Length: 274
Ligand SMILES: [Zn+2]
Image: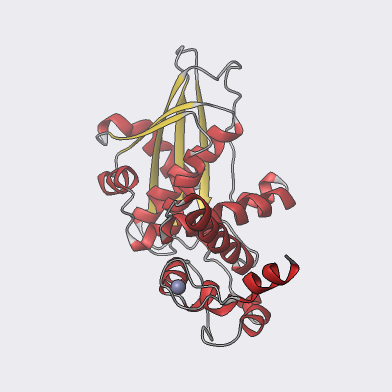
């Protein structure tokens, strides 16, 4: 029995995805699937030395840092490897196939949850917030409407984000603003406004959300999960955050219908002097 078991363990294991011999290097770095996963990671620079042995890549992975909009400042390497490993196990033991985007999405979510657990809330978000007023208790079954908007200044790439949460019993609204630096485009600013609004909705323990924005490109991307490259990381954050709610929908509204959120966004932007 012992011999038999030893015999089984010494059999070369083949990769469940491509049939090549499975090693740490193949599974985590060199398999086409692993390469696809790494290529989706929004980092300051790509993972290097993919053909080196695993220990070598691990030891040089400290430089692998996610770009700012993802909200992750620590090393992401181990989270990606962990999610490649669990995706491999799901395929083998449950016959369930996760695609590369799902693997990256999980890795970013886990890294962010861990990161946020280490910091206080204000440190973790890295944004300037104000204007919070408490939402009514018993928020679990009501449908809350969130209007979001952003204002962007090309000169210093600063964005003001504004959002309003409409209380369904019409007894009031909750508003919030944030100011974001190093924002590459108006579209990115709009996506950041959505993310900030959902972070607040989550903090308020709201369950059912209808989020409205006047940016058609963003709403289309969020509904189709086809994210433009420039906002890929932020939209993955939004996707991850969406799991915090019992229900959530993303709806396009005209600019006229979004004027209150627009005013908040502009005031947030103008509060930062250029
Ligand atoms: Zn493979």
